[in-house]
Image 1 (tube, rainbow, N blue to C red):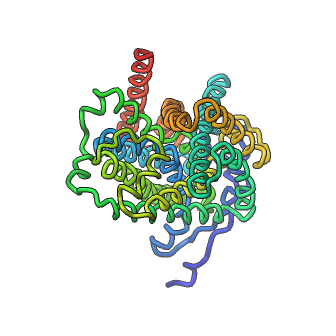
Image 2 (spheres, rainbow, N blue to C red):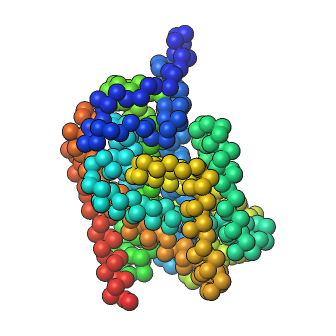
Image 3 (cartoon, rainbow, N blue to C red):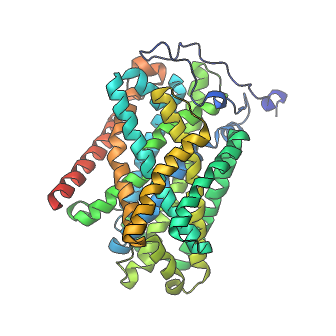
Length: 458
């Protein structure tokens, strides 16, 4: 290998502004501040070695695609409808791969995250509405993390649900510690917990031994998904739990932590590596989400337990039905890892959204406590009023709320990356533009269908 292949690039200087093709010329603060361009990358070398320098942001984004909110919708879907909704998981994952690729492209090509781009392009009132919608999505996501982590603490250590929900506020110290150690420390923590989740579900699937033919058949679309209101409700919840709006803001920012050359050629190479990174990571998320639903279908649905909708029910029944005591423990360990992992990305997303839309920077610990405090209150109130069954319904509802916020992030993103005046040579090709607008249309139609069914059934 040539001697200069091990040389890394220093943190790049700020863009001179020539790559910023938005209307607001006053934009100067790079996304994520001092972390922007803080991770060195190889200037030359093999394709694999250069890719490894870009590995990380995709896995941080993938966390949002396998958080506790996914567990509730996947368990309910598998228990009630068997393998039918596997096609929804596959569709939502493919949509996620496309949308996250667009998000990474926007951040690298323009030097702005999605929040900054929205603020600069839209009038102030529209920008505020988009910000509020995104904040609602982050709170809904955080709500799922609070419930999931609290349930995991109860299952593993016997901590009451209300106390466990309150203890989740302490994760702010974990976030502060990791952020002080640099962005690579955040990524290493996330990837380590992802490995725990992956291995846990790999073992559980091996224990469940689902029928391969039935599993493969589940990946083919079924009319029941649209014609059955209950199936559609869970299907939209799966989409909401999988394609998360705040992930689009997050990805467009954290891809800029790499110190790639801020030139057209440097951006072109960075886009290729960033898209490869996120695609590989989201395939891992597909395995985890599919594994949860397959496990629920093969263990609960196959034995007539279609009533299983709650995470705690799944935990209590897994070991007896599978005949393996370790199954429930692995399930709870993976749930705790999922909840802890999601705290990192939710905190970062909240920071990016607030700074991008409002140019308001508050201390990380304050931002975390505010968001987590808003999420803890409904968990404590619902648990006190309706018991632990109420939190299960609240968890599924949070994912539907997330799905309802998707158009507010997806439509601006697709519009920006389709605009040559903003993207320059990195504008998406015509075929990808058509595909992206089809995805946006599917999301809008499904949400309108859910809204109509909800009003009609009220």
